[in-house]
Length: 503
Image (cartoon, rainbow, N blue to C red; front, side):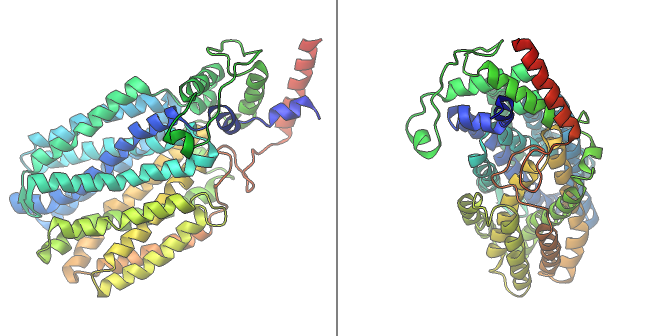
């Protein structure tokens, strides 16, 4: 067999799986980054708790409540869009720790709010930083994990959004008297500590994504980070070695020039450089035009529709449930019960996410179908809230890895971020639709959620293919790197140059 052809088969995914495995570094990175999503889930609940309190304390009108709600989501839209342009050009790690530190200060800005106009500024700024941070964790984790565990790691990230909501209930229980009054400034200040801690830990312990470095032409730097991961993962013991595939590092007899530890050979470097040349031939990094080329257009549009609808449903429920429960003299425990419906869905997602015939796409479609039934049922009875949230969270859990894996590394953060931004538009318009519906009939918003579920179902079943078990970059329907005549000519030239150098 042609030796070039053997080397050409080595991709970054295969190098990570073959040499790094899954070990201490990935677990450390996951353990730090999940707290960004924990904080995100916490702030979502706290922001929804603020609205009834401010309405009572500041005597706000329904229109002012709608403005405060939508301005937060507008900030999220702007932040989610900007993060793609910045992180796909400047790197993932820098954006992570800077966004965490800024989020800490923005959360404490609520201490200075004394009127409606101050709150508009605080919610817009906080929403912007919140939206900026959303795509970063999934992008980073997807780019440092092997394909066989990537889906589960991304679901664990999504799980901590639910953990963050439970943390928010604890803060609300400590600081608030009920849905209509309490020490809300103290509550917001206490919630800021996780952002500061994560920012510091990310700065100390985490490294830049090697896939990002290679996409930006820094192949040697990327390979050195791969070697750092190999070094940190060596001699996995205890629970890590039992749960994940461990790889014992071997020092190469012919390490590549510039190697720090000598784990990666010169031949492997050549193979990876060929792979990088083929996969990252596109120079348009972080551009919206790439999301609408012939390969991505239909997928981008369908994902935007799904994100729009699921955000309308998911955040719409967070918005409307405090009003519904408050009108029925319910407590925080009743609200917590509905959120707990998310926990079993995460456990189920971890079990089925890597099953080929279910995977991401089919599970999304099934979940949207079931959610539509539960939302219609919720119009007639209260108890199906729990099951509606179960299926919505199941859909969301699969949407996270799918939206991360389907886009190319050069535009992954922008692809995920733009989808999240379009989703936040759905969240931003939700108060203008749901509050008037609530004023007409307490449970009428659930029919709007049912319609959104059906639209999402149609979009999910028409997505081109599933991403389970497939390569991250330049996927076709078989999950393989696409090629063309120009690539083949480049490959032949590289082989001729290698043979000339050998002679």
